[in-house]
Image (cartoon, rainbow, N blue to C red; front, side, top):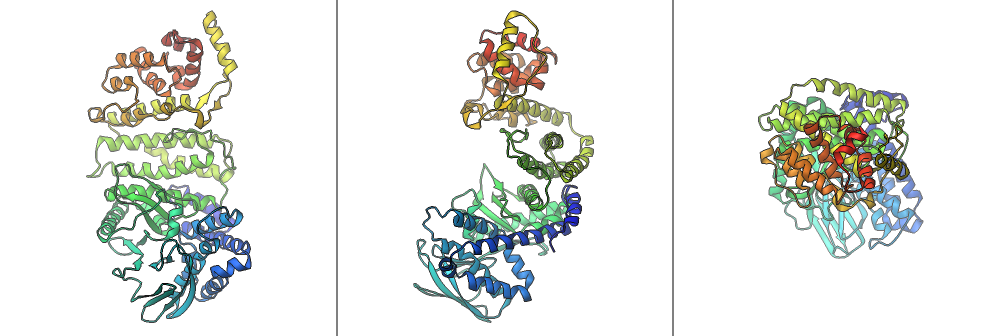
Length: 583
């Protein structure tokens, strides 16, 4: 059942505990079903009669309506199937703006017939339907994919199924007969696989087939896994679920209710692994092949938090819409809008909790795991504080953010090795300074007045005007990233990789413990590149360690002021004297 307005208040409170309950996720999923029904009716209403007939829309819709009366759970599962969302979004966009596409609109609309056929196969012993063949294939969501024609073919076929479980597809190229939907050996049929927990109670689609999965995936052609690769996914999923059940039991019930499918973005593990979710497909996790169960467990926590948050904000207003990118998300180098900030907060709450528990495990019980926990804790707490003072949260949004902050507060009392705390502190200091210099610019007229005061030996103005946010397209390539942040959070500095191409020389000296040398190198490079944010991050680390905190006050609070004043004053300016003057 979808959530009522009264229920939504309780659901917001429930999910603000960090994870929420199965019942809350089920209610939000019911709300998503209502939203998708509205989108489906909008899609149908936007089609002309010829396109609708060519796509088989009237028959497909009638079939689903009939089956919904007797088998509502089956129809609901298909309409809430993760890739139904991207299909609706894509097709509605094409109706609004047809543009140029090699695929006819009616062929895209044919997905509704595929959903109806999958429902019919699940609910009726035998039957037949005329279906669209799009790009040479027919996808039966939650069942499998039939390859009937060449990839450039768009047409139709007839599907018949019998009480024995056999399928027959008849198209212009002839007939394809399949004994059962689970058949792995037929050259024209690929069944959709599952992965499941060790006890078999939780099953998730391993979806490497659905054509519309590509719309939300980062890879142009997500791969079809071979049998051995699918076994690896099964092993890692079972291991991941066991780890979550044993260490983070509160996250498992809502995850079980949310997670519907995994979409592989690679067949094998990659050095640069990646994962994401899509707003239009809650319950689907797109990810490169995991290296092991631990990595997959972390990915699932992170991405399912995003999915739950997407379900929630589709139905509850936690904030006033404001696309302005002006918030500091400590895990990003660019400013974020309030939506992105809150998404990150909720996702990385789960990541923080993972490391809070998993840092005591046999496989990751190291100082580095302690540092990862502490860094994430500080980053998420910093982001929550910004959300709370943003002026954009509704009453429900304030309750949500306040409850998350309350849930995290005891984590600040966790026992940590000193090296872990030190690594997290330095990483936070460097990145915050880098971010402000990278993205913020004080008023040029005020900086000019400040430079005049500096040159005349007069004290600086006590007034500090607001900043403007730089156009991200105007930032030079060598100013964009801070490799030092990842190197600082490494507790074993001896194992830190060497200086990366383009990285300031001072970083290597600082990581090696040569602070005075590092300061000299940063200062020398600032003569030729006075607004390079990585160099000011280096100063924020070195100056207080050598000269104490007084000279570094401005670097803690408004490093962009120091950077732009130094740029205006000229390369012969004594940076340390300038910092002392500003302090």
